[in-house]
Image (cartoon, rainbow, N blue to C red; front, side):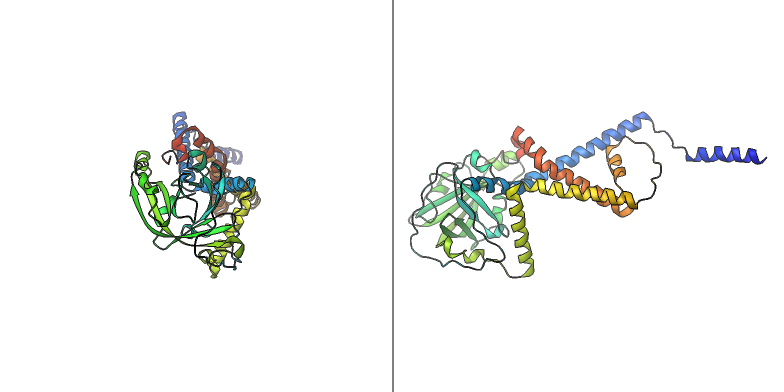
Length: 361
């Protein structure tokens, strides 16, 4: 009787622990659904690269170009205290650089702490696709009587935030020896054939920034230009310090932001920032996997699945805290790796993948 009861219990336990087999068609549906979700996430990561991610690596590209031409940006950080004396009158004439050569840097504080972009001579895609600023070769050099005009793509890496500029905001040009401080006056939209925006305004010293209309629609972006106009305020020697408009704020938050910007730019000089972030999040992911594996108990048996998203979730370790953290770190690693390698490669295939195809000035 006891032997019969034990045999009956074994059969019952075995039947209870059996995992129901999922039909093949259901597994195929799960596989397709998971792959579509992953493709959707990768598409979202690429859209984020167009709007923001490529700006991270733009710093590396610009710093590399400027370093090879020995045109360094001024050091402006939390400890910058020397303020250059404003000078009136006409500054010395700047020599015009060769096409695509770096002539200096543009600083716009309204766009963020430490925001500055290299200025190259010319406005072709060979210049603008470096995510910097191009100087119209037919316009005057900074500080001179006339219209000193510049162009840039409408992405977050360069002139994307142009609509944020307000009257009175400084637009500063830095060359090897001098600062040229302009003050924003107004902005408006016009059509691409309105070349009058590049004309001189009598004896005035003005600055003009041109970029595309801020639009996700390619044709709409092509149809208009966004114009920013400013007037010359003063010039100063770079050897005397920095303009007062660039002086760092003394509050703790501003100091922290300034230090973060300094570290980011220092790292970006050595390698694209997306690579550094991919390595950092990848290391954090591996750490969460290792610690989660040590702390986690024995994994229970789960139904078989072909859904790659579910399989990726099951890889994570550490229970209710470790698994979500690991899952997030894994996808951040994928995103930054895509920004570093896949998205730039896609951008070379079709203009629509670059986000700047409509911005041919």
